[in-house]
Length: 315
Image 1 (cartoon, rainbow, N blue to C red):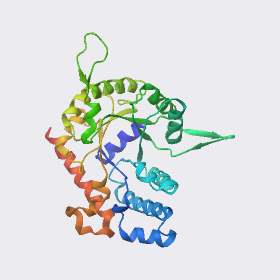
Image 2 (image 1 turned 135 degrees about the horizontal axis):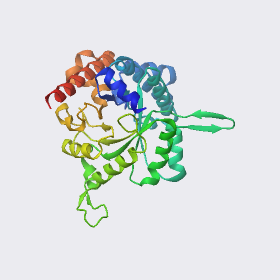
Image 3 (image 1 turned 30 degrees about the vertical axis):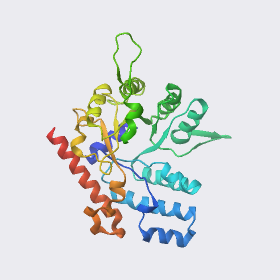
């Protein structure tokens, strides 16, 4: 699957993933009113509104980007109806030829981790038949519980040729409370280093077991808000793709991103969520209005693409 992602990045010339992280406050009234008229002000109505909103976004940007990243919590808040919208969104995006990164941030051990991996990346047997659950192409994984929590996902990835993005250094302000803590790797000659570097080294080792042509199926999540950290982790994980959240709404910009890429111009994919899907609510794109929310999203993608290309050209 990493080969499909790379091919999509080359085809679109856009190392961009659109975060499909819907909130009801993002969804224009003409969509919610129609959904509520059909299903009432219910969880089913909310799920329908989310699905229709996503569909508009996807239709507007699917020719510009290689991938999307639905954040499952934004769907889970609406219960089963939200998960139905999540499943519809995943399937529709795959029909459009997009790579789907399920932002699920799971982290557990044993049979629980195996069940998460099966439900999101693999298949489950029911009697004499096999079924796929959500069937994303990649998922995000929290490695805090160690290898016991990650290896079940890796085994499914090896079988299915799918991939992971493992949390290494996240974009939120308090990430340093744990991720930046100085630790030693256990050898007598080692010196204190931030925990995220040790996690990055482990990701690189896991990645060696799941190689594509040039890059591994096992990538990392490193926030755009920490560009110098990205520079260090790029050296530590030369064959791992880096998923970079934090562009736009969280403060990251194209100039912050150059160190996440390798010299071949590959190796990173940059995420923007509300900066794209709720672009019409920004002053810059306000002229599109709420009915033109999808066109505003398309314009935001084009601007993001130009910003990243300009930054990479100057490095």
